[in-house]
Every structure is written in structure tokens, then in C-alpha cells.
Length: 127
Image 1: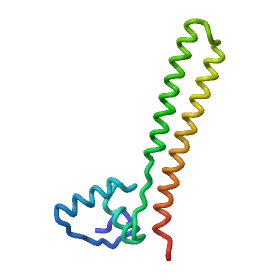
Image 2: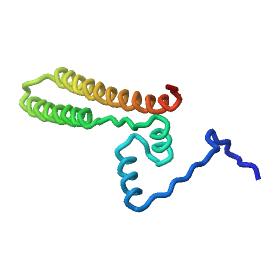
Image 3: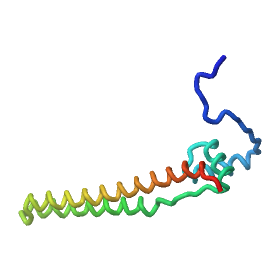
Image 4: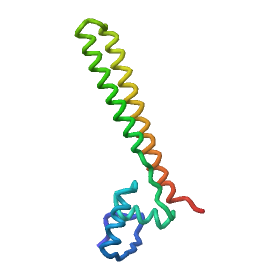
């Protein structure tokens, strides 16, 4: 019976592990940009290392920008209640907040995409 899916990698390699080794590798995979053992192992074997990127600072920045936006929205609501600010100013502030949020999200997405491309492209490099 012919395989209906054409595989780019038809050669299979197997490895046997004990429970401790398996748990250790699972933790390494979770900390890596890979979602399965196959991709993790192939990259590690070919490149000799797995590069991980810590996005925690970008995610923290994103949370902080959102919190600032929420605070500004609360101030704007109060100012609007007491007629201390025009609707045009409110809309302008909301637009500026949204622009900053969009810039942060775009930067996060660009960094993540760049790192994913680097991972996949690195597999084809020769030294």
C-alpha cells in the first residue's frame, strides 16, 4: 500500500529513554520554541544547540501599556463626567493609546516571527 502522504523526511530514528531522561527532555522542549520532540531533536542534532528567546520583557511591556491605557480611560471618564475634557480630546487619547498598544503587539509578533524563521532557516545552513 502506497503512503498517500509524501514525507520530506522518510528516514526514522528512534531513541530509548528512562523516566528521568524523558521528564528532563519534556521540560527542555517546553522551554524551547518547539512544540514536539521531533522538531526539537532534529534541530538540536543538526545545529548542536537550541536558541530560546525570552519574551517576558515584551509581554510585561504589553501589560504595562494596557494598564496605562486603562488608567487613562478612567481619568478621561471622570474628566468627561465633570465636563473638563472635550469628546475630541477623549477620542484623541483613545486613538493614541490604541496606537501604542498596536505598536507593542506588532513588535512582539515581529520578534516571534523572526525567531521562528531563524529556527527553520538554521536547519538548512551548512558549516
